[in-house]
Image (cartoon, rainbow, N blue to C red; front, side):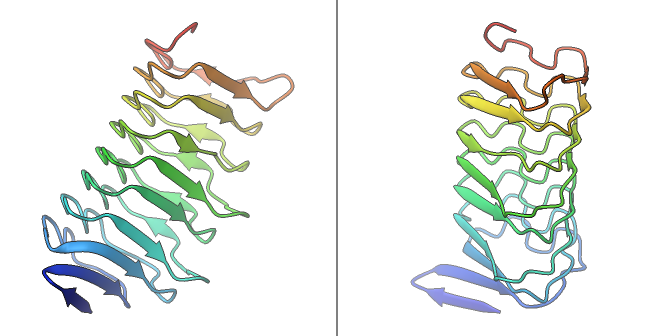
Length: 196
């Protein structure tokens, strides 16, 4: 369903999206509301929606999976709140969202993996707190997040992939929440990170 106001469009998603790249490069969409009955959205559904600024999920969301590249290079998207129902966020879902500054995971999140290139090239990202359930941070997950100032590595994390935090030039505060962390850290995971 589309609502329009002076050439600005709000997309209300009230059912599953099964078509790949369904709204790719739609320049009219500035806001998306995903209703609670939606359980799946196909990969690359909103990639290159360059005027998209806001995405919200109705309270009680049943969405389980955020698929590959769904919001790839949505340059104007500023923040996102991930529902607690989401158990999987696939590769590059927010890659190249150059305006994304804040990511929030709802309390009681069950997410276990920060996937490959998930927030890669999110050059304005400054605020993110990872769920305690995270066990794996895959390669390139936060690469090129130039101004990310701090990160707390959850106690459950056992693996940090190659170049996971590469070129995070402002990342000066890295806190490991495990008392005695035993983490497999991949090659160049903290490349060009200060004091690493």
